[in-house]
Figure 1 (cartoon, rainbow, N blue to C red):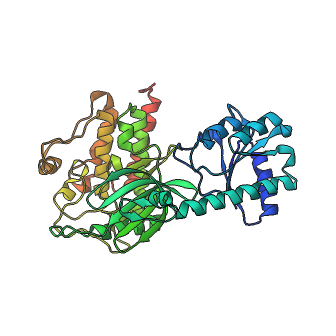
Figure 2 (figure 1 turned 180 degrees about the vertical axis):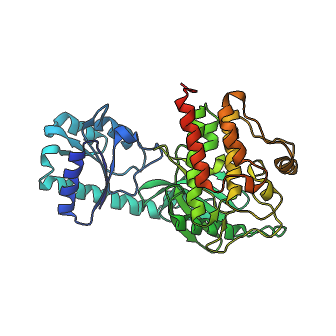
Figure 3 (figure 1 turned 90 degrees about the horizontal axis):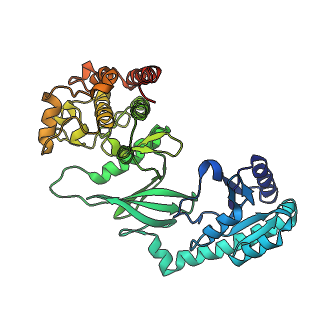
Length: 417
């Protein structure tokens, strides 16, 4: 049995967990705290749970209010509302929307186990119908790939070789990002995009650091491969940059990215495609790097780009990467410098009408100058974006320390309210 409990009271959570395990020793209970974690994502149906338990109330909310909204989501898991003192009116309203009720006084009695067993049977029957129905099969289709155990919610983006979807995982009981790659190659290209896709999984799994996207699953069929990844409801840094971004926030993001690069480089990996779209934001304020399909992995001796070919995003590529020269970790630091400049100035450092002109400017044009109010940041920017690798910071840890010191100085001098 797998339950989702929506409750703020830690003691109540511990009590319910204890009662559940005394009845089902191998049961699992996931706690969602509505005050600190907010509401459940609107697309979430809790299909990976046998039941969803709702506390009667918490600061600023009531279980019955949530039950009304959640029960209106077609296919949502059975709801069990915890009622205080056998409140008949609450029980009647819960019954009218199809929810079970349990008195908080009955948590130590058999009535609690009976209600959970009934909810479990209902959910088991609903899952069996969903898996075999035409509608259920269609919701497990991602483009032309059929992937069991995942409900397709919507397509986020697509490209020549892969598509990205938001899905709900029955096994995880959570929303995930599901990336599907097609095993097809353009005869004019020598890059094995399908192999790059599989390398992405291998690298991210081996690094296993919070600074890198969490990967949950990998699947391969005759014509497709798919990655099941952590879903970021807040989106990426590019999206965040479209709204107001204060200098303090920009510097904090730069510090976090440098720290993430230090972890990636320590694992023997060069990212090689660092840009705002590959920096994802978590709801707890942390960041995670994604998209290691173009990475160089020294530990695995993998480099799936051919010698002399240029891959990456021209606006963020170091001069040496833009000219297909040998790279080391300092190339990623240059990309970080470009991101920092863009966060503070509101535009990219070098702009032109075509990619090759941008590549040329990265090597030949003078170092970009930040607006005057950011003069304190200019020295660290110039170290990050130095034309020659040997003139940049030695590594990401050194860059992080310099960025953190700049941020501390910025705040100490009251340069931002």
